[in-house]
Length: 532
Ligand code: GDP
Image 1 (cartoon, protein in one colour):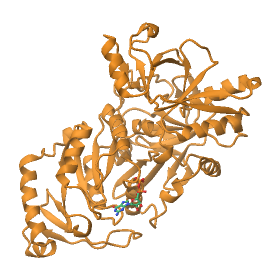
Image 2: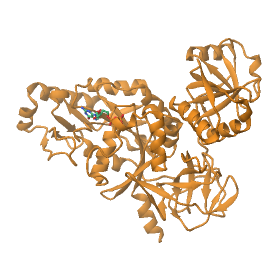
Image 3: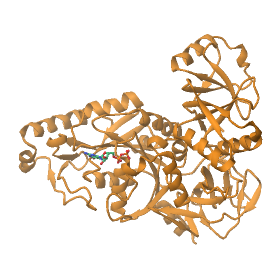
């Protein structure tokens, strides 16, 4: 393949994640994108609310049936001349570290916000990860067909709660029953809102009006029309100009309004978004930036999914291709183990289906069969290259339990099981600072992981456990790992633990305690992410 053809393949790729608080409309928006791309034919094909409320055992059954994660996958489809990869960030009750890790593989993020609610808790957490990576963040304010909060207030909420500046690309006229349409600030036209059947492939024919068209005034009604003119004037005077460089550095978020359910504003958003966001960019490694086009194949592992079939203790490693072209029959090099290997059974998820693939390009995500050699953050290159991509940070868990093993005869299986599950990144394990493996504390980002742990230890390793919930909600890595934590002041109600590598951490019941400990121990640094 010529470099020119390779460049074309890579430059048409857009790889992004959609983040939101549960119920803001992420699934609905994803589905509408897929409808535009022709990847699915009817609304309701993407896993919806009803099926995502599985009990844990059902969830396991599904994983088994499909043989692959239903909780985090990639949806690839073509739209116009773009090849789009949507990285699905698991939300809802299975919200886990995988959600954070998926963001490490995305080139940009779409943040969906419910117009009646504004910024919500889970959005804040996911947003922090995007900020850490300096990736562009695009905001879609959804559910304008329902009564919404004041638009200026919503922008203010994003700016103050999240600390990012905003630039509305379009602006709504009314909301709920009085939602009349959206004003495009660049084109200076209004697209009028028509409610369409929710299952339709595309929105009904949409009409555009020039802002001074008398028909628009009639359509919107005098009140709303005058209000629009006033708001436009305010916006033009007060809001930040749309500086693409700032957008690409993640300092300014372009904002769009719409209604995913009725498909209104979705196509406009998609078109602007695809123009403003970039194809895969060079990625940092310990040997400098790796160019996606001119460098040969390279990738990093961002997620490992255990096989739910207990007869096979193999796993699927998901890797994001960062440069070049992947060809299934070529040898690759796994930098961390120093081994040359072929990636077996490479597969890609196209909309709902898993397909075995023979080639893929920078920007794509592939899942490969993992005989147990990959860890999260590992780098794969072509033989001859030994650089490593920056590791994936460990994110702070928020729920903690003490694990009590019920049958002490099975100690060995228990330690093996819990260590393996931790290696996959589903849970983090800690030890009491002074005790040995006798007391294990498990931390998770999403509480569902506790059930998964219990289920897997019983079913795969034959170990029964009891989980005793602990009152801690915050964990922080001690910046300097040589700190003697037994000498820290103000440690009543604070628990010192260590991770499997011996790094010290502190557990707190609330964030006020974190501030107290910081205040009383000069020079102490406490970290929310652990760089690997
Ligand atoms: P997710 O949890 O973020 O994936 O949210 P969903 O896409 O599952 O949407 C949550 C609920 O909000 C569902 O009942 C949707 O039908 C509804 N919903 C999504 N988008 C809109 C919208 O634009 N307008 C209205 N009225 N409802 C919406």
